[in-house]
Length: 161
Length: 112
Length: 90
Image 1: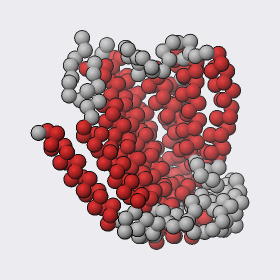
Image 2: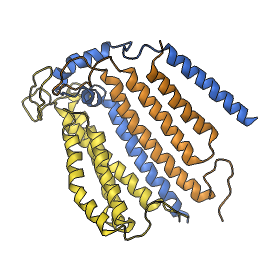
Image 3: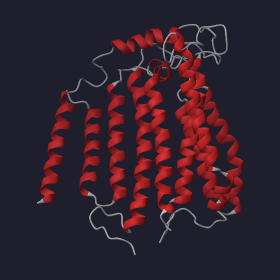
Image 4: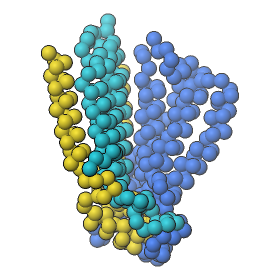
């Protein structure tokens, strides 16, 4: 039974793999955050960025084993993050209800993310696009939490009992 | 006029359908559904392609001739939803294996 | 017998798919482009976003994206419930 599947030993893999997993934690997180934060300027956005950060959870679960992973990665926390992302996204949509649902009320206004951009091809400016970067952040949080929750559930509950 | 990308879509969807119809293993059926989803994604992206156009992003763009953005946005939606559906189907397959002791769609027996 | 029915269904579906692929517009020349041309021409000044796909996903078709996020949420909850229901009656 269970031949060739993910490691079932609760202590995880060798110290080499654990060290490399720890060393990779920062680059993976930074790359995912970069993809989320530049969603309105370059290809990417909340969905791919959240998926990139969620791979870190899978890496930790494989490297450190199920027991440590399940203890450090709390399911309730990810469930809460998921809810925060979805509710934040809906709230941002409702805030534009002054004119219409999903109205981009921050764009081209003298506030956060309201910088006017030169139309046509431009080198790209960070503080533009109104609510779109904030929605990217909310969706990134939601996708990261949902994918992590699914991965943790398959790892901890999906074994052959 | 034969367009090769649409033929590729047809081949992908036909492979996925054949997998769903002829395989007995539930994991392979899930794989077939995923392949059908990939075919639909490829159809959406190739529907919006414009000849010698670039991705619809203005950051340091060299030309303003761009492919259609709406099919790409719908493909993004489609990818995430097919991922969610795959996760749910696999979870159900795990539970069915626990209950019947088999992943076959035909030979079902209760595990003692 | 059962296999023959399956092969017939597959052949029929394949024929329909192939016919629609051959009747499709030529690759590289989309048929209806008015809406997308509007997005490309006006999206940048209306939303301030350089990425027109992000503008479509989060602004013009934001309701779609909210449904999609809700589906993802429901899928995670569904996986949680499917794995949990077993433990209870054991």
